[in-house]
Image 1 (cartoon, rainbow over the protein chains, first blue to last red):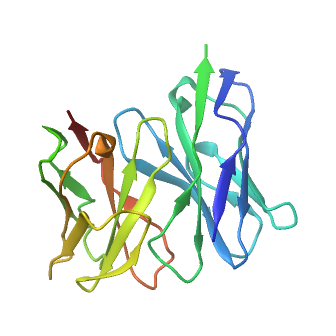
Image 2: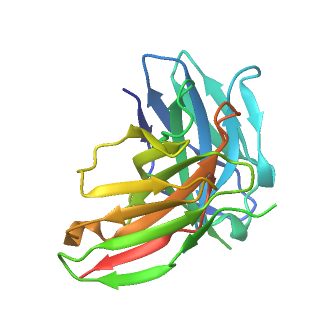
Image 3: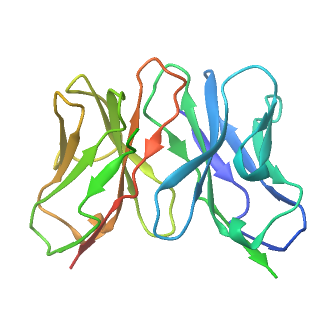
Length: 114
Length: 113
């Protein structure tokens, strides 16, 4: 079975500062990794995904994440955040052989302050 | 290209009632999955449909059931509603054999009183 742990429930940060949202996963089989963002009262939007290849993945809105197999981590980073980045962020994992079943973490609330 | 659409967006039911939620897949997608997101939690996988058959299920009781239609749209049915069923229900579509990206709808928020 797979599991995902997001190490911070809330991350407050000032505008234009860098941010890192931490995600660790557990799995005995090959997995794909995802970060989704959820704005208030909306569905989930994909930020980026790791399927294979380069361990540094770039996504939308200036976000990037690094897959670290030895540490089973997939931390999300942004060098300079904006007020509009305030949202809930979810790390997710799925078996590479199963299209639909994503296992999500509990989420991290990113609060960007002016 | 139309995205994933869900209806209704909000609804209120009482304990013991039944509810049906609907989802239209993104154009060209043949797989639909449903997730339950309780307040302050991450989404939990309910089940997935491919070619009109359920082909994966999470830890949800049989009173949660679904359908997928030939046009790949889908329904989620919940019988004998309980207070803990109050949540945002998210539908996601994808292409079997594709990169695995799920495209989510905006959800149906169910309140059970």
